[in-house]
Length: 204
Length: 202
Image (cartoon, rainbow over all chains, first blue to last red; front, side, top):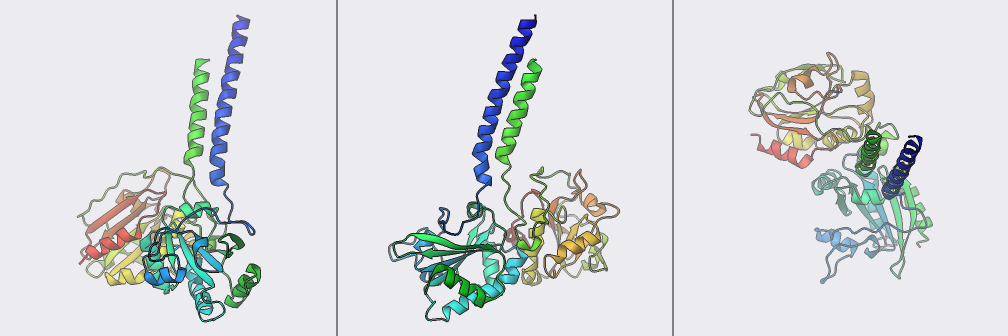
């Protein structure tokens, strides 16, 4: 009787161990989904594509479509030396408040012969549909291209950052790229931010 | 012994499935809220039985607003269309997004001669602190705190834990409910659909 009981206990222990192994391997599979970090300075962007803009002014600005190509593109394919990505949301009060400042940044770049065409801006609306991104663009007269990320797919790849979040990417002549700025929060002064971008990217 | 095995298997399977399913989308991500948003996790999509119907007269109410005044639904009858936006609770992820979004589309509401009334079952001081983070809101925010959730209960959208559903009601100038959406509490309703419903009002 005793040995039957102890055999049963051993069997139970084995089952428990098996279940624990299954459980922890499932955990190991899911944890990386949660533990994605924001793009690190010195590293590269996660792998994602944006759809070719419908607006021809946006297309020309980004330089991502020739006469033969107008499909989805990656950030390093943008014709620029430096790309500043803003992760925003139409629903985020800080992004709303920051919109005029980001617009000034865009105007400052576009009005400088040394910077125009070399530093470019794109916005990605985390959890926003095309309609919602359109509302934001119209409300704040945003002149640079904005993209929707309705299912938070890009936002998840970016480590689910809070918003607004700014990422500076340097694009090298050989097509490689490097993140040189990755920071949460509004920038108070356009001049200060732009100088930082110029200095950190090594762009002259 | 067998019971123990079953218990183990059920428990572990449940835990593992939970781990796989709990990757909620990131609402309430604005830095405006810093780390002050409480995340309740994934909740049961809806948890009440709606007691009003499209085509029916909307039940009236008189609730205190954060601004200090009292707001009656009936006062808008014959004058303006009304959107009631019930959200479950202050300082939670999806709710903290929804109204700041409505806050930048006042012109779309104006265009359709519509007022928005935001309602939760929180008390006024909580609503005051919370909505202060959203910037200045153009629409009244009403407290259905005491008697607790009375209006939500009348509409049949008070959940069993005492918060309201995430629900939208479009009420025309005659006071008739023209559209309602008792939404999955975990998701933000589409702005586009709501605006299309306003376009249908004449």
